[in-house]
Length: 177
Image (cartoon, rainbow, N blue to C red; front, side):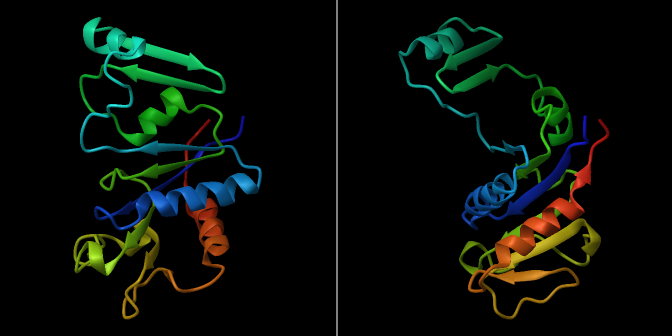
């Protein structure tokens, strides 16, 4: 089995992380890679509707795990004692992925693509006084003046997604099989 690669897409709230991750995942899947994703949330997810059977299993039955199986999809709710890191989550749940794109987990030891929009914050998360430029694979921004030691892509450019997908694949952290 081939090793799994991992890349994190980070940025401030409402910067466009999900939009970028979805586009990047679609481009890599188009290339026939097995793409899997992890989304880091800041609050517990409520993906089910009150009163539905799976909701009742989880909320009323206090089950440790609830697995919902349906046509073409499966959802697992699991009680956890502490938040895991994305590498541990990948090993546990995403076996067989060629690449795992992680949204968030900005403190994880993963290479990063940052989405930086001026409307989401005056400064990017990358701070050269704190972070190593080598940890950042690229920046995608609407700030025409932003420059860095790593590749910077503008939302207004064309065809940058193909180059970004190449960088993501080439610079991703490779997990041992």
